[in-house]
Image (cartoon, rainbow, N blue to C red):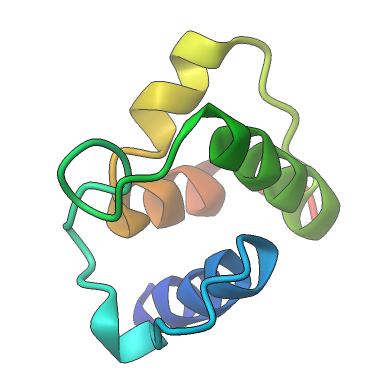
Length: 85
């Protein structure tokens, strides 16, 4: 699980071009949206593409994405349970 979390952090940084952020800067449970990293709806789309491309996971609704992308840890838990790649 910890390896997946670290991998997801690297993939998020790359997908969202967060050049000033390192995986070590991203805490596992910090909110990705709102007060945490302050990501927006465009960033959600990028994360959805990341899950589809890297893990074969297709999300059906934005509401589903909001719950999954609460933090890097919730994202990793979802990937562990639903990955197809």
